[in-house]
Length: 369
Image 1 (cartoon, rainbow, N blue to C red):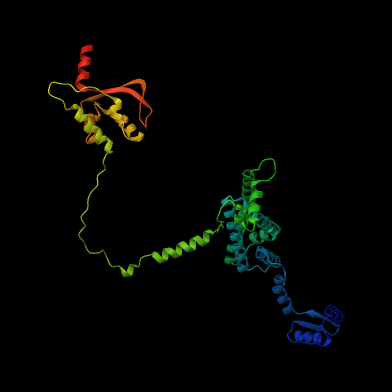
Image 2 (tube, rainbow, N blue to C red; image 1 turned 135 degrees about the vertical axis):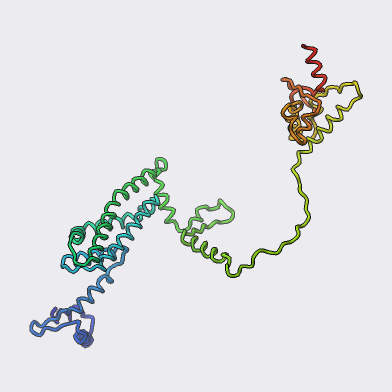
C-alpha cells in the first residue's frame, strides 16, 4: 500500500500522529517498508495476528466454531499439514452437535425442532461443503497412528450427522401432523404458541377474571435439579456421627377401638328380640314393614330396609357378630310389589309388606302342602 493511500485511509488523523503509529508498527516488525517500491506491506507476524483477530470482527454465532474448525482442517489437508489436535476438536464439535440435534428429535417438541432447524441445516451445509476435503482426509494414509485414529473417528461423526437428516425431517413432519387449525380462521396451534411465548406478561390475559392477579413463575428442569440436589445433600445423615438406636421405653397404656356396626342395626336387633318375647305357647304377631323401617332420616330408614332380606338367610346366619345375630332372629321379611304411601316427613312411599315369625311361616308352608 502506498504512503498516499494510507494518508487518505486515515485522513482523520493528524500527520504527526499517523507517522508515529507507522513508526511503532515498523519497530515491532508488523509493518515493512519497501524502499524500492515505496510502499508498505504486512510482515508474516502481522499476517498471523490478522488471522487470529479476524474472526473477532465478525458477528458471533453458535456455528462459527465449527466453521472455523472445518476451514482449518480442510485447509491443512489441502496443504498436507493435517494436525491430530485439530481433527480431534472437529470430531468433538460434530459429536456435540449430534447429541444436541438428537435431543431435539427425541423431545418431540415442535418449538425446539423449529429452533434447532436453522442450526441443523447450516451444520449439514458446512459438512457437505467441506465433504471433499474431509473425504480425502479420511481416506489418506498416515504414518502417525494417532492421526489415522482421529481421522476415522471424524469420518464416523460425519456419517452420523449426515444420516440424521432423514430423522430430523420425519420429526418435523410428525410435528406438522399434530398441528391443529382453529376453525376457519387459518390460525394454528403453533401460531398461538408463538404468540403466547412472545407475550410480555401472560398474567395480564386473565384480566378481571380473578379478584387476585396470578403471575406464573416457570422454573427450568436444571434449576429444579439443583435445588433437589442441594436439599438432598442438606438432609443426608452423617454416618460419622451415628448414635445408634434410642434406649427402650415403656409404652403408654392405650385402648384399641374396634370397628362397630351402625347403631341402627343394634336397635333393630333389640326391637325384634322384644317382639319375639311372648308367653309360652303363643306366636308373635306379624308386623308391618313400616313399623320396622320408618324412623329418623331417610338414610337410616334405607339402611334398615336393606337389612331385612338377611332375616332367615342361611349363609348370613353363619356369620359372626351383629350381622349374624340379626340373621338368626326368628323372623322373615315378606315384601310385595305394591307401593304404599307413608305419612312421614322423610319418606313419601315404600314397598308394602310385613315381617312374620319364622315358625308361623313354616306352619303356613306345611298347611299349603
